[in-house]
Structures are given as structure tokens and as C-alpha cells.
Image (cartoon, rainbow, N blue to C red; front, top):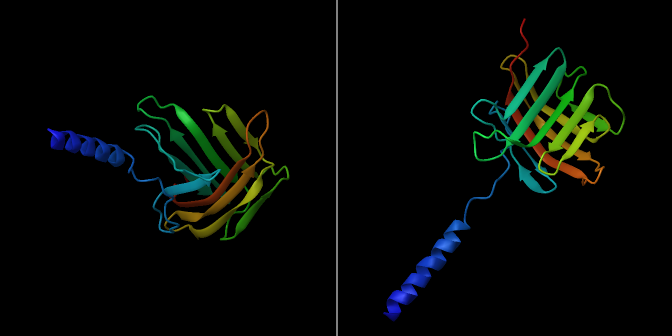
Length: 178
């Protein structure tokens, strides 16, 4: 009887540890082949897009020198489609080469960053954020754009400052219609 009691507790303990061994979220590799990936750290925590059946997690476009990415993280369970957070950036100025585009706390009309945390009711929506986007691959034949990004979004109205670091994207974009 004592052996059954010990065995039962060992199984219960083992199942407890098994539940805690779920793989931790990791950032996607920094690739340049059009894998349609994006990820970053938001205040040190891995942030990955998550879409729904009728809404892609990552949307991107490039044409006439303008580049944008917008992405969502939709909450579970689907199909509730409730947004947990939203992130986007746009560069509307002569993006024709692989280089770094800086966001330097100026009121750029052609560079914008938006981050929304719907759970905390915090909205970071303006063009005066500090950061940069580095385009590491711009392939207009195969419609691939890849790179890295980082931003600091100052807190206001009771919301904490957001540090977006180690961002990377590898996107196959849809060109504008001719």
C-alpha cells in the first residue's frame, strides 16, 4: 500500500513539472528570404504576432519609396478576435536602398511608430519616438524586404515607457497595383 502511495505522489509531481516545461517563446531567426516573420522584445519580453482566421498577423507593403509594416497580437480563444496589442511603423520617404532610417524625436511627417496595448489601455501614437529601422535586404524583383528595428516609446498618461529591442522582420510584400 505504501508503494502505491509513493508512486501516486511521484506521478502527480511528475505531471506538475511536465506542465511547466512548455517551450518558451523565442524570436524568429534574422533571415532574408521572405519567410513572413517578425518579432521583437517589448520591455524584455518576446513579442510575436498572432493573427486569426480572417486577419493576417503581419501586413506589409512597399512601393514608390514607402515602406510599412503593421502587425497584431490577437487574444485567445479564437474566434473572439480581440486585439491584445498592435504595432506598426511606416517610412514614407525614398526607401530605395539598404540603409538605416533614424527616428530622432523630431516630428517627422514621413516616419511614424504606433504601439497599442489594449489590455493596459495604453496608446503610443505619434511621430516623435526615438529609434531606427535598418533595411538589410530590399529585393524589388522577388518582393522581399528584411531588416532590424528598435524604438523607445516614452510613457504618458499613466503608461510605462516601452522599449522595443532586438526587432527583426523578413517579409514578402505585395507590390502596389500598376
